[in-house]
Amino acid sequence: MIKWVALHLFSLSFFLMTPNFFSQPSEIKNTPQEYILQYKEIAINEMLTHGIPASITLAQGLLESGNGNSALSVYANNHFGIKCHKEWSGPSYIMDDDAENECFRKYERVADSYKDHSLFLKTRPRYSFLFELPTTDYKAWAKGLKLAGYATLPTYAEELIDIIERHKLFEYDKLQVLASKTVKPEQVKLKAEIKPVLKFNNIKFIIIKPGDTFYKISSEQNLEIKQLLRFNDMDEKDKLICGTKIYLEPKHNKAMENYHVVCKGETMKSIAQFHGIKLKSLYAKNNLKIGEEPAVGDVLNLRTRKKA
Image 1 (cartoon, rainbow, N blue to C red):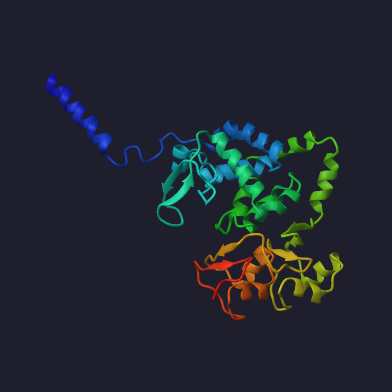
Image 2: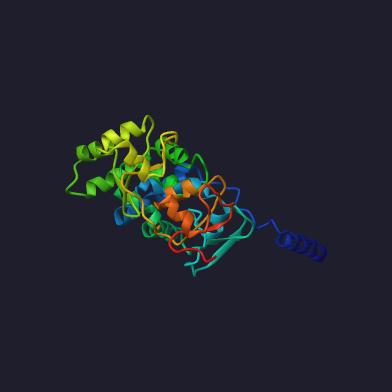
């Protein structure tokens, strides 16, 4: 009997000491339907409080957390992949992502993760233009999130839209319309069909859609083509890329954020366009010659001139 107990105690201690024994989430996995049923009320509440479509919040939660099955969501209650950033003073969870040992926010409850996701979007200037979109236009929100740099995945917007349509999550967005006494359903439908003029860095812009040309945009917005090109540091040879911004007013000499860390595939022109800053000003602030391109990982100044 003593040998039997000793043998089982040894076996138990072996499993407890095995590094991967508790390092992975349970094999019992949530389905998308189970995830939606569990968290839809939280997403709807966040929509009514902060104006973010419930369909978008749920789709991001499903995609970022793998239906709530990822290690980050299981062990840190972080369903949106939000990293620590400088302002975070709460608990953290360390794991490999784009780089090794990255810091992610850790929450006491999943509801805290949903609330922080809303505040993350609401308080960052780069996402401010999204809140001028109708909550029923989930496609524009999905494309806007990608445009604002929420994720580096090239197909991020398309994947969100696919999740929303596959699970009919757009039905939850209608509750925001019903909660507003001044907006009628037919008015919302009409507004969604019109190309919205948004603002970023206090500059009017639109999002380029399939079939757009410089001539078409200039005609629709009552601008001369040469004005449109000048506002966007472009010439007629440049291609209009679907889902990106084109400004309808001159950009500023300063951006809203202080710095930009250069990512793979970015150019001075794309960075200037992203932040709504004039290309010449971006070059001047970073002591670079016109035509010179930064390296991946370089930190560019967006508001003040870099010391020589």
